[in-house]
Image 1 (tube, rainbow, N blue to C red):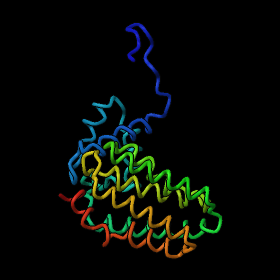
Image 2 (image 1 turned 90 degrees about the vertical axis):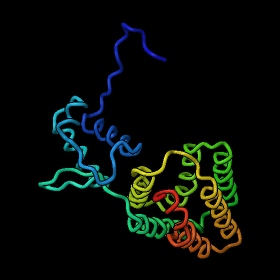
Image 3 (image 1 turned 60 degrees about the vertical axis):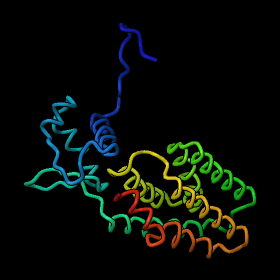
Length: 227
């Protein structure tokens, strides 16, 4: 609902650096900048109506998150996502999530398993509805269950950062990729089956080597990220 013409405009009280960061992140996500292209910083600052300082600070954060590369004499370029990047992220996230699952496994109750199954059913409903946002929400919650139980905030933050690099890097259009998402749902079910059977080590191995196994997921990775 739009405000009345004479109503005051909402004020974004966040620091300019955060506003610029969010804007650039959204532009990268929607593919506004070609991979490998250099940014015109003067034009960006002018278009955004900000000085170079908040723009520089936002770009430094994006560089720390590996979305851009800052070269002293060449400027700022959008990073190109390579298969090696995805392989390394998969290896890292798979190892950390598998360790979190093993740490959480002794305390998992039948009610927890029911909750995880409901999240997996939420993923399935999202696929049926073609709703990528709902799928991402339920999928994140499924994986975060194990991460939050292990309690290490730095591990949680690192895993979330790496997932954002996968999901927010310039790549596919925002839509459901049914075969890949359906396979992920089946992999969730296998993890839950193994936990219910009292085999947490096998469940962790399936999470690490299949669900986050680059070789197991590579055909989908190449189809979605490098068509």
